[in-house]
Image (cartoon, rainbow, N blue to C red; front, side, top):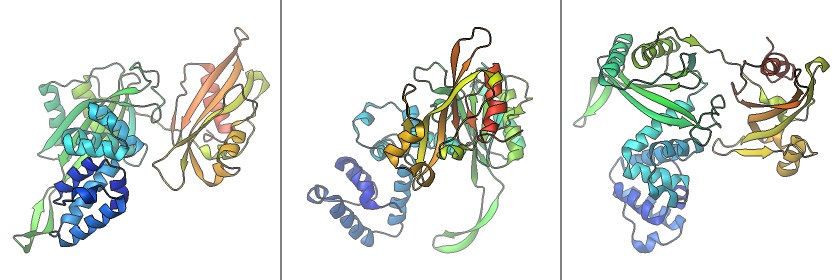
Length: 394
């Protein structure tokens, strides 16, 4: 259970009071005007005398709010609601709780976004290439065709599908950071799928008596489509089913052939940037300089914070000198994980002899903005990232 004191400390008193009353916990105005610890102590006193289940219900709701009080959660909340009340609230916890209390549908939609993004690049995630610039069909006939395919695929009598627009900022996806929605975000369509799983007999209490009940648990999956890149991503428990889900999505909702192809991911190792290194190049490739201009860091002790260290391109100091002065001499190796790096390659064009720059953005574990249209991109991706130890050798 999250700390009651810490939870209350991040909330305006009226919002905290509304939340507590939801659980039949009533704090007097005098106590509510006291310190966070006094309020927390009073809550504990009332929980002792509350009906069984009250503490569990309070803990459950606090945990739901905390899950959307992360940077990912706040981005998801911004995607699903634009209520003016949120801008006046002092913390992520307060904004998440306000949506939880006042707009349950938006809160659930934000949970769906976080579920999808938190599972990206994990064991339950796959990415596929498809046709670009397709409109996702949302008419009842097309949606029903998709649901019908899912019912057959999973041998499930009940399937529910929700389709909505959302975005993903460059922090999470650098492949589509040139999309024109005004702030560099990737514009996506997400399809959240709920389906009944196979029946299972479980013990349950009925009118106080222990008995066995057969129930069908509901499983969740998600599909996102990026019209700019043609990328279709799927989060679902079983690898084999992910391709079939995406094929059904392409046929029913994109209206294109279902011959989607898995996208192979390159797993990058950013730990090599924890200490100063030289980026060796060959003279015939006309590369002038290679430097690291930005590192995004995650403290080892928490996943809820990020620290960025940036170096201006005219600075005489390298990124390791900047990080050492600001964070401590051995901080990169001892205190942080590197989650994203920006490497600037300055090279001469063989055609014009002008010095140009290629900014390579790499995100752990396997995202980058490297394209394959230009020779310099292919050179960096296939020759130099492996040489520098950032990408595996072919």
